[in-house]
Image (cartoon, rainbow, N blue to C red; front, side, top):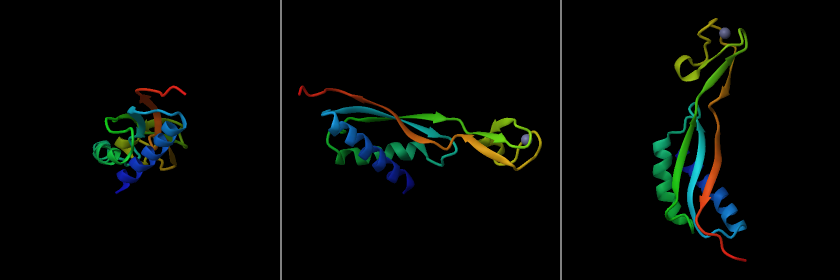
Length: 119
Ligand SMILES: [Zn+2]
């Protein structure tokens, strides 16, 4: 499952930051996900809820998702349009010479932690 792979990747990345900073508990992780990335947020949350048990310090961690709208730029007429509505064909000039500008991203925006051990 695509979503599970992403969740494991995110948990591994955040877990590494947690260890490096001697953080005991991660209370939330926020991801930025593009609408054209093909990632289904509800699956992602299901996978996260299952996978977090395998990581120390993530027992109560919440996954927040921020959606980035999918915007395509037309290389022929230089207009921008909603990718989900029109796909690869520009609604202004019908050109198919278009590129996805935003909407394909998957990145960790921020993490919230509860307590930091005194060193
Ligand atoms: Zn166009």
